[in-house]
Length: 276
Length: 308
Image 1 (cartoon, rainbow over the protein chains, first blue to last red):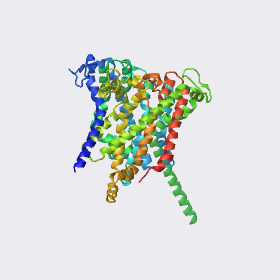
Image 2 (tube, rainbow over the protein chains, first blue to last red):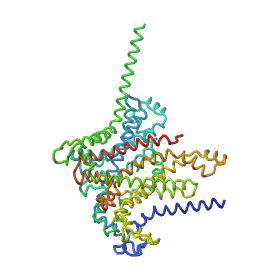
Image 3 (tube, chains in turn cyan, orange):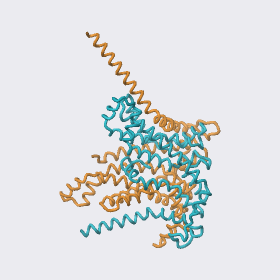
Image 4 (cartoon, rainbow over the protein chains, first blue to last red):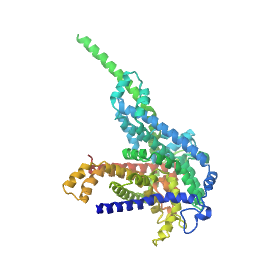
């Protein structure tokens, strides 16, 4: 009895130490973001600011158009996510529930795209976008990501678990396929759809290399790219309180969504192994 | 009689064929939106990348066919070897560290302890946050003069280190941050794998008198091998593509190019030097390499993986 107690205590000690290492950077970010310029450099450093400088956040908002970045990121992420769900549901339904020639071959091709690293498509896609005049526009950030093999695959797996009899009953009622999908299949597939939506949103919101390449103007930048230029503007220099405030501004919405929907996040990953 | 029968069969077949065509039409219609995106933004670009890699092109002047010269130039350039070495350094250190620590944490979390979901949340939080934002936070932690890390290490008599500014330490600093950022993802995967192991296996082993250590080697590890395989494959693929934290924390490839990795080199060649042909050749090489690695892993590792 005592041995297990000691064992548990040691486990908690190890986990708490590692856990502290996970949390510390976030706490230090919050602490720094509320300090005044001189307080940032005070030695020894202190965790609690003398007087929280809330106006740092307002200053940051003035130093770079973070409001605009927010709008850009939101528009891009929302449309991308909706597109991924829609194209995913249609394709997944065809793969899971319809029988026609070439279906399985096409499905293999879809799966094959998972093996293609995004780096190889980067330059050709950039060239096509620049020829079409899509550089520096929402279109370039949205259209290439309106469908992913992951969402199709995940939804298909889920659709396969929905009993076939359901469809046979509805078809006899004269329900058209499309209406059937929207009225019956989609409400039944809420867990799978919310997983797809969550990871679609997260992927779009945090995406970096592609927007870095196709966006030139400050006005069109998404949050990560806006922050990237904010960091290099401050030149790795001395405005750490502003940098930390800006970092918090960028990560806050995702953190809030994560804390509200942890279960979906963690179960979604555990089930599908999707990289967020 | 016979004739009527064949006629009817023919009609039946025709009707069946018509139905099959109809079904196929509906099926293809449903597949069209997703397929169009895949074709235009994955299949065609992949073909284009191969094609472009045979040309010299800056997007402005006309394309010039150079055959395999781009590849020859790459293998002669010093930057390529620096980038390959750095990438291997990153993967070779980050991947094992990430793998071992996350496996360890998952094993501890699996000991029926209290606060499981609390710990899981703690480890998972960095995974969902934007890499740019946490990179900025770690730049501040790594600050050579006023950074928290040097301050904390001074208590145990270490440092001060120059971290990202030191050519010998820059990559290691990026690796530490990357392990911190990615750990929780594998913890969740490992934990799910561990929780999927049938408890009756342990019960049977305990009855047979197996020690906890034996149980670990003969039950836990083999049962967890599919998860380990998945974590490894995903880890290798993702680590070879590292870019964001490198770009944010060590702009320009780091001190003395010490953090210049392959994807960063591709980015530089294309969008700083406007050598789109050479950059395409590089990306083709990277993709082939990742593909080869995935296939090799499949060949050698999958046989050892224990599936139920």
